[in-house]
Image 1 (cartoon, rainbow over the protein chains, first blue to last red):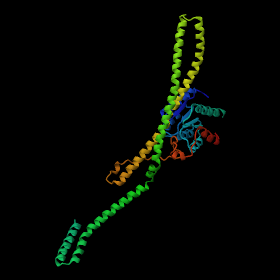
Image 2 (image 1 turned 120 degrees about the horizontal axis):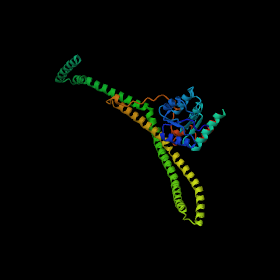
Image 3 (image 1 turned 45 degrees about the horizontal axis):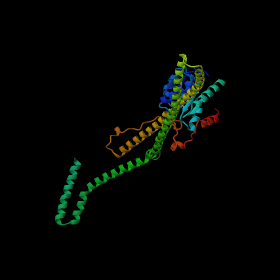
Image 4 (image 1 turned 60 degrees about the horizontal axis):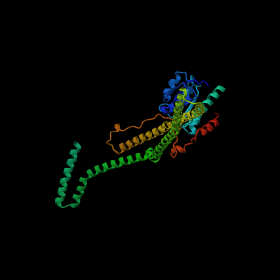
Length: 129
Length: 254
């Protein structure tokens, strides 16, 4: 796993973006960018260069699930690893995210260990492919 | 105008006949004419009354038919109170979590600071060759112990700082819950405005707030925010935590 990879953090709450950014920095990832919802994230992603997307679900304008679907539908972005970090806890929603092609799903509130574990797992799987 | 004239003529005619009947002492015929004179006014009154009754009926029907308002009062408003209570307890928890970490961290830092100040003082004396061999031996042992302890204690302070950082996640979680309550208050307001419009025809319809048309999103898929205990949320099929999420995903082949 390349610690220098470019990560986009998408959450409408700036406090949560800061928490995730801090946790990622502790894990050694310093190349992070932020967006406050799907509609600002998508153009950033399309401009290229991102290696990993960490997104919330419940956001104004464009929700995380729509962003995930848009990413998977875009030929340039379709294989971008996506980790959802969200308070959405309905089983139907988790199934929906899985079917839409999410690579990992973390339910809030979460711990630093959970974040590390899920990121490790995502990249282990991708490297094994 | 023509109708009014016609009406006046007929009323005059009736009045003359009424006077004639009264003078002739024909009471039955006089009463008949009085009834005839009263007739058009009574019809107007009944028409007005009929219209009023119909309006009232329609207003009541649309009030009853607006089940959203019933739902709001029965389910959503009690839920909103529960949500706000949950926000209070979440913020309380987060504050305690932060203060607990500070309660442990501040004495650790104070003690580290004091010990390093004391050792610095002795180090200065050592540099000035003021320490005896015996004093230096003791100093070296204490320095050894301090190096080990400070490594452990700063590590502990770092953990406590992370704890403080993670405690701030309440702002996102409670923020989502509060936004949901704000949306509810807005909806109640719109419904009440609608109700006032129904019961008062004098209100300018153009001034009343129109319900905001939200783009149609599948309710199942739309984000809800955190699940709040003792509300309608609890009736949904939800996971209880990360282990539950992991189990569900692994059952889906993840």
